[in-house]
Image (cartoon, rainbow, N blue to C red; front, side):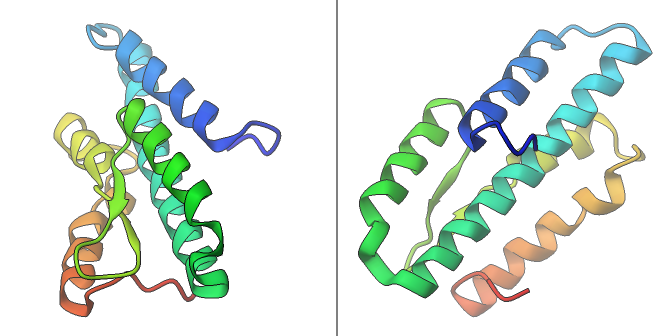
Length: 132
């Protein structure tokens, strides 16, 4: 992610890149869409982890800002939401699933495959692991 660009705008830009490549026919367009899907997933996942880190360090102090961030993400189609039964937030991993459907043997496929593992780990432990 470009450090000078706010996360929402970066996520929004990636969503626009994905949408514009919906009917991609050239290999270059398909590769751009694949890369944008993977980056969207990676950035949304990182954002959810940052939210959880903030909660672990500051409690409910920034809850209003967190709720605003989650609403804005939802408005652009990025699913970050409060996890049921936990004081934590979870990314839905939809961009990774879409990437794997589009490019199951793509350049980012090994990294994208962690999504189901992370989801099951979250369910087992009733919350994300925010350390590390």
